Image (tube, rainbow, N blue to C red; front, side, top):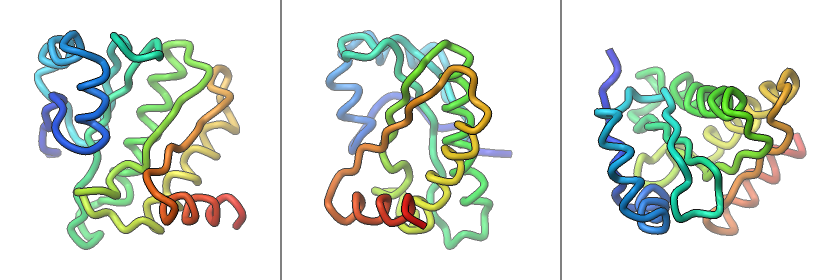
Length: 148
């Protein structure tokens, strides 16, 4: 059974999104009563210049022997499917799990790029996915994955 994680903001990208979206996001996330790792939930964009915010609790790296790669792929896949189901034509992701959750960047980038590529092959709605990279190292790793 996967642990239930709260969606209430904190540090990193999640905290930044919560601060920018405003208090309405916190109230909306309370209604979910958490979310299992790798599943996804959707809310309004509130004060952000986005129609929606898709939330996915991502896996914490514990050496790769606790289904972390599969969970990370499912975080992307479930988020993309939720975007598709809600008529989103574009999706923007950070490099999920590679910050304080310590997922190795190169492994995470490969999973992200492959999962997104495979999803877009069959998507009827989502036609653009962007990765926002926090620093030049992350950007270089993702660019490398795109060129393999």
